[in-house]
Image (cartoon, rainbow, N blue to C red; front, side):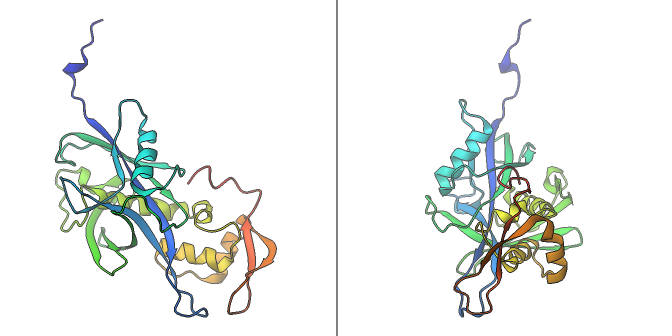
Length: 269
């Protein structure tokens, strides 16, 4: 049977990665530690299209590599982040999502422990907040100087990007391509994953206080939690180390760790 591949449209394939972390700013007082904030890693583009705009780290897949290998390579090249566990978020394939042509993007998300260092001077962490009203999500990204980048996103549901539809109208978009929608989708996925704490564990050292863990949850969810309810929910997943918090300027707290019987939190998000 004859088969001519040139008779079929051949899109380009790219990988885009949403990388979350939780950062804690400098404390003005050891008795009043600054609260942790959820942040996402973005790169300022240096070429068209969308030159000088913020975008997710990513790039085109080479012939000799898998899409997952592309994601790891681009993450390492642009940010210095080396091979974190990635979870597939979605595949975007609508013609017109990229002005350069028909480009299919495989989108991944992950969470990593905070590091200031990046290999690309254009890669930086941006604080993330999300507001929802009337089916519209407003994504607000804030850099370390306080400048805000605001994008409005509409989602049919947490698993479907609104702008896959031809009639979609996004009033404001401060990011390149459809990356604002991807970040919103990833954040909703991260929040839903907190039914179990494995992603949160990866944002903490091996030993932590329950307050540390609760603050990570609050940073991701964007709201305060009742201490008693939170500790009751988290109890099956943690165990005491026998140690106490050192160097604190207040009453020392017990240190906990992930319960040994719990699944490996590095295996999946």
